[in-house]
Length: 389
Image (cartoon, rainbow, N blue to C red; front, side, top):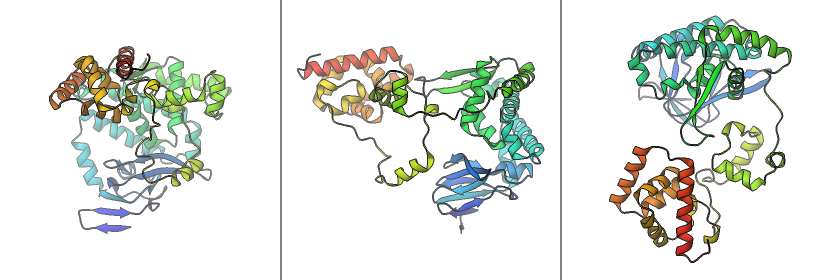
């Protein structure tokens, strides 16, 4: 570890420990550069809780609640960290809306009470613990003043699941899989409502709302007792590979790969063997994960808007001119990065700006409409090239 003269900045090399679980916490950290891994140890196993990036803060709960560190922190790569004292953190909290201050105080109180609890017992009762934190977070969420609520995107839809998950992980020794499993159980039992917002079902923003806050925890406790008898709350540990999945759903593996690429399959279904995946990743070229190599396609094999990267600019300009501003805006909203650049690069600056403004104002395109416009574009290109449609 090295210390820099610029304020209270400390540098850590990849793999270097920042602090260990069980240590006293006197300062928190803000990541100025690099990334940090948070993990806990249970039964001799290392459980990764989160990987934090630039701008994120960690270690604050130990400082504020006066309890030992509940997780370990390690530099995932070379990083610069700014040290935050209790006084600095309190000053940051004081600048937050009153509801957020109240929620923070409740979380601190909860951590203090949990300080003497055996972590293994907490882990076994994670379902009820998740329910309790959800109940508390939802009470704060619905008690916000109107002005505060308006500043939170989609406040009426409930609590954003990524935000809730972060709160839960700060307190409990649980994984995202366990959190998702608990929420799915609660939704199946009609205790909460899960909704999605945004383009595409697989990667849309997800929200959770408690249906009846007054009876929620009591009903959840009663159901927990019944479900525990049949081990229905245990996370599913049976996995299948893509070939077995293809056989189960009677599909070709290449179709499943395409659906993954198109974000039609939820990311919560993707799991990798950590050791094997990281070992394989180390053997790849330096820029392997920076861009996707596309296999060159013939004009007759073009399928959608993302295939225009294989089409010459002159043909693209001709097809774009026939589509018009509106349809180009629809294509722009569903095209990936390279295809999006291809569209804008073949329009004049003035027209490109008009198309972008209209697309932004209109919002996400209707999937069915986007598919129709994409098909029309490919048809125009094939006709221009003299390929049978």
